[in-house]
Image (cartoon, rainbow, N blue to C red; front, side, top):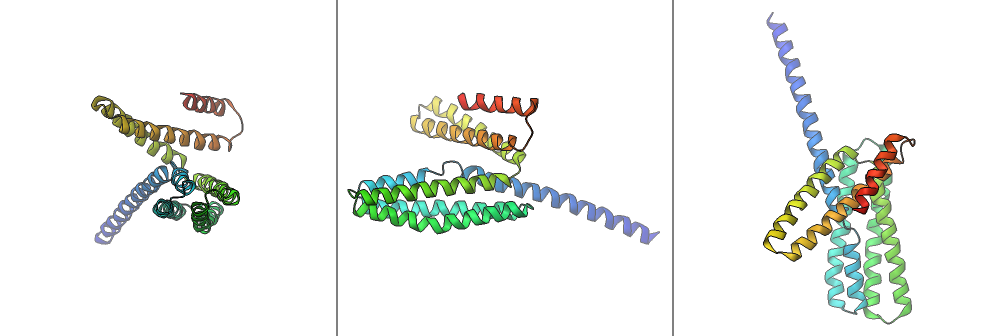
Amino acid sequence: MGVKEQSEGLERAIDHMCRKTRDLRRQLRKAVVDHVSDSFLETSVPLLILIKAAEKGNEEEVEEYALVFKEHANKLVEVANLVCSMSANEDGVKMVRYAAAQIEDLCPEVINAARVLALRQRSQLAKQNMQVFRQAWENQVRVLTEAVDDITTIDDFLAVSENHILEDVNKCVLALQEGDADTLDRTAGAIRGRSSRVCNVVQAEMDNYEPCIYTKRVLEAVKVLREQ
């Protein structure tokens, strides 16, 4: 009788541990998706600021914004690797890791192009060179973003995005009440960015299904969100 009770107790303990492990994994997954939601929100801003400083020929600003740009690139790679650690999609993980490695390789080349432009801001060749690296960077970030989205659970992404948008709406209301125009503008921009990301992710998800009344309604909802 004692052996049976011990066995049942062990089974309950194992079942409890399995439930806790599943809960922990779900929380970790949401935390990773939260990083994705933030890090892949305004991916072009650090690059545009860097290019603007280079076009002015301001070498000091270029070095300052080069650090910001590098930190941004490192964050993209870090978050991409985090997503990989939570995914069982082997092919998808390979694609993300490859795209992340391309970002790492491209980052110093973009910075060097900005430095050259800062030194020779009137040079047509330097301008064209900067434009080439800008396009290469934007294309590679798009590839990485799509690869990360492919191995991210859409339910988690939508839940996290909804929470952030609701938080930002509350911030906008507070900013309106306090007459804080800067915060209102910045937060409204974040809402637009998150809404656009939601539209892109959902639209890409619908491409995985055969056209039907369900996909039609979802795409109609995406169109409404984009337009409003």
